[in-house]
Image (cartoon, rainbow over all chains, first blue to last red; front, side, top):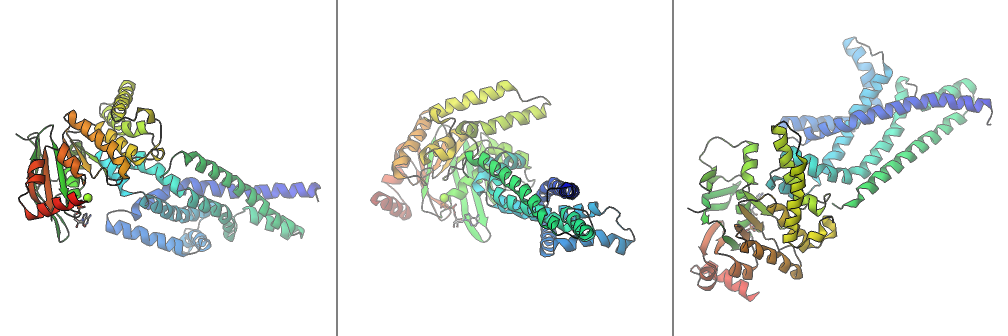
Length: 218
Length: 263
Ligand SMILES: Nc1ncnc2c1ncn2[C@@H]1O[C@H](COP(=O)(O)OP(=O)(O)O)[C@@H](O)[C@H]1O
Ligand SMILES: [Mg+2]
């Protein structure tokens, strides 16, 4: 099995995996901060903003990501006569929006779990709202949401495989191409190793972060 | 002229009248104890003084300056409120220390942030010297409350009594005109209340102006210059500790004082 074909198949798969990684990184880098913005919207004192944001979160979380990818890709062409050329771009947009919605709910849960007394202690010490958030609340929130966040990030690794519904050449799509061309099935199963190793590394990274924040309780 | 003058202070939560017109004065260097049964509005009064709640009516004057006046139409900006808050310090029943910071950092944090704010306004870098001084000052205050050895500990490593002493140090660091305490020993095991009360007595020796909401009747009797008994959102009786505890005029005060004695 470990002949020339094995290595060339590995190379093919790695090309797909590069796309998988690209989608993962771009989605993460964009949706983590965007999620915070969405979170502030969903906690806003301005009722219209809050209601709209929660409606948005409900729609995003209430429909399949696969459907969202297809909508982002096909809708501009069908509705406005402006077909999207960049398939990967469309997938990224759908993923970023989707994950921002999920992250925002994780953030909200974390922020709302911080005792009111922490804010009030900051207030009576004359701190501004942003000082209270960034200097007092944020790190405590991070510590509390690390576990749900790691769940979501691991899900994202696996969700990248949805990109193939609009023919983006991610890892599984690359394997399927090989399967179709060479009439062998194992490359498809073998992709599982890539996901496992990737998620194994992520699990280690999150474990390290959790350990790092173990110096305090709260 | 008294340092603090509170007049006609009212606070409603919806239809509930929690404070029904509170009037009192406090002189510099004096200790005022506020006693009263649970739900009588003691916490709400402290929260109004610290601008954690906005009163519905009344006036708060400090050192001849008006801090709050309900009849004044223009509402204070959040920056103004922040400045006003600094006249008061507040020690909470549940300490509310910042768990991710060491004891020393808990005490220096607000001072350092103030220096950063000043630096930003003056378009300069925060002065290393000022930050250094803050640390020195914090260490001195921690020494005063008997916690110099715990400067590098984290809150979770401390007993409740130690945590509350850190909270007091944290409030003192900003040198408030008046330091308020909301049942500072209520969350503590009985054997830990002593160390906190001792620190408060020492503050009194140094003429720190204090308002103390407390269930510690011995403390109220022995340490305060003035006692206020609150009932149903009003000041039912006020006077020297001897007046309120030994010769109460109001029946409600009598009942409350007798009940506390029997505990
Ligand atoms: N945020 C709030 N909303 C509604 N009611 C409140 C709030 N805070 C306090 N109250 C009510 O105000 C009354 C006085 O409360 P509080 O000032 O905490 O009394 P005390 O500290 O004397 O026990 C109580 O009846 C309490 O239920
Ligand atoms: Mg209370």
